[in-house]
Image 1: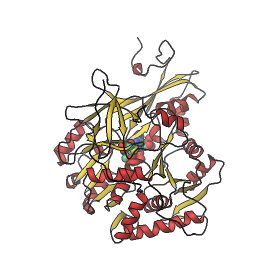
Image 2: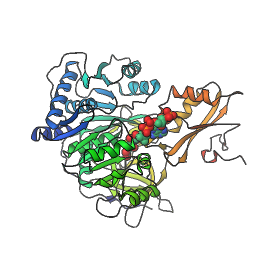
Image 3: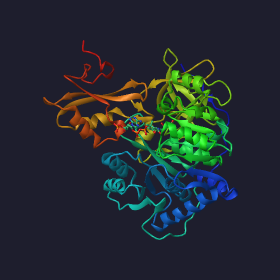
Image 4: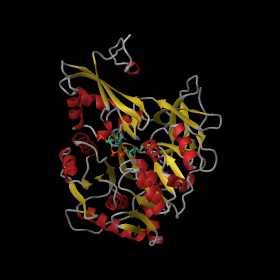
Length: 499
Ligand code: MLC
C-alpha cells in the first residue's frame, strides 16, 4: 500500500539565494537593529555584527582560507562563536561544528573525515586533539578576550558571494547506519529552513528568542540562531541551560520565544515565566504527552512540537494557529513534502522527505549518500511514523536502534565498539531504556572475557573515548548475551531473564 504525499503548502522562492546574501541585506538595510545579547558584552546590533564578521572574514582570508575550505568551529555559546559562524558563511567556507564534549577519538575522526584547513576553538587542548587527527597543518584561530584571534594579519575578503548551491555547513550525525558522517548543508538549504521556520511560527522582528541550546547542532544553530537572524529577530544567547536562568532571561528581556528539547521542558515545569512566551517549541526527541499537558495546565503554555533531522532540517510542525496535538509532530513545513514508505498493516511506514532544506549528501561518502535515498529520490529518515485522519504525523519508532538521550543521538554500535576494545570484555550490546528525564538512557550489557571485570574501570576507560552523553548510565555483566541461530545478539531480549 502506498500513502499519498503530504505537502506543507508553497515554500519560499529561493532561486539561487544563499543565507549569506540574505543576512548581508539585513545587515546593510537595518544596521541599528539589535540582533544579539550575551551577558559578557551586552547587546549587539546588525551593523556591529556585520563589521565584526567582516573583520573576522579578513582574518580567515589573511591566514589563507578560501571558499570551500572546511573550518572546524568548536566552542561554547558566545559572541565570537556567532561571529566566526557569520564570517565563514559570508566567505563561503564550510563550517564544521563539533560538540565541545567530544574526546580525542571523536575529534580525530572528524579531522580525518572532513580534512579541514583550519580550526576555531576556545580551548587550545581541543584544537590540539583535532590537529592530531589530520596530517594537514591546520590554521588555528583562538577565541579569547571576547574575540576571534588568528595567526596572521588581515587581508581583503570577498564577501557575500556564495551561490545558493554552495556548501556551507557540515554537522556530524550517526544517521541510521555506520560511523558518524558529515551531513553537508548548502547555503540554500540553510536559507530555506530559516524562512520556513519564520513563516510557520510567524516570526516578527520584535521577537526575542532565549537560546540555551548548544550552537553545535542544527536545533540551536539553524532553527534558533539562523532563523532568528533571517527574520531580523534577536537572540538572548545563554552560555548553557539552567531552568532558573531561562526564567530570568524571559522576564529580564521580555523574551517571546523559547526552543528546547523535552529534557529541558521536564526541568522547566514550575518556571512561571513560561506563561509569558508567545511560543515555546520542542524537538530533537519525542515530547511525552503528559509533560505537554502538565506545562499547559500549570503555565498555560501549549508547547508546539516539531520534527526534523540534521540531514533534512525542519520537516513537520504542529500548527501555530490551530490544534497542537500532544504525541504528534504535526504536518509538513512550507515547501516540504513527506510520505510514508512501505506501509505495514497498521499504517506505519518509514518517513520519507523531499524538501528545499534537504542536505546535499554525506561529505566524501557517495555510497552512503545514495543509500540514504530511495529510487524516487526521497530521503529516508529512518524514523517510523503513521498519519492520523487529519494528516498529523505521529512518530512511533525508528528503523535503527538509535538512542536519543536528552536530545542527543547515540548510535549503539559506536559505544559497543569502544567497550569491546577493552581487554576484559568479550562482547557488548548497548540499548536505550526509557527514562523520565532524559527520554532514554544508555545501558550496556557486557560479556566478560575473564573473571573479575570491574564495571567502574570499564566506564573510566570508555570515558576517555566517548563524549559523556554517550556513556552507559549502567553496565550489566551477563554470562552470555541472548543470540539468535545466526549468533546475532537479540537486543529485544536484553534485560529479561533467560528462558
Ligand atoms: C548532559 N548529560 C547528559 C546529556 N547532557 N547525559 C545524557 N544525555 C544528555 N543529553 C550528562 C553530563 O554528562 C553530566 O553527567 C550530567 O548529565 C550533567 O551535565 P550538564 O552539562 O550539567 O547537563 P545539562 O547542561 O543540564 O545538559 C542537559 C541538556 C543538554 C538537556 C541541556 O543535554 C542539551 O543541551 N541537550 C540538547 C541537545 C541538542 O541540542 N540536540 C539537538 C540535536 S539536532 P555527569 O555524569 O558528569 O554528572 C536534532 C535535529 C532536530 O536533533 O530536530 O532538532
